Length: 140
Ligand SMILES: [Zn+2]
Image (cartoon, rainbow, N blue to C red):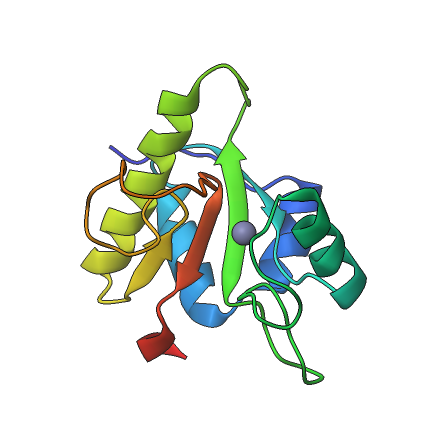
């Protein structure tokens, strides 16, 4: 059943930074689950700070949040369920799986931060970023 959720102001700012294929995915996702879009485009300083703190495992410009040309859109989005409960990892995973299923239904290949190698096994990786969704390299 579809609901009437809508993006808040901060989410709309992030939305405008996203690749059109990511916009199609989140537009469908928000019909089913209320979410906040946290980050789209990430600058060089931010990316390298995230790397230094361990929040990201790549340096600029090697992340899909990073753009290197004017007008380029983010090929990754970080998002979380709304309202957010930091104690409910399962709810974040539910959102991530729902988003992946929606993407596949739209014929768009994606990678989620709970399954970087895309093998369906969540226990075979060390770096977990449950908020992260990115377009597969074959999509851009
Ligand atoms: Zn991310």
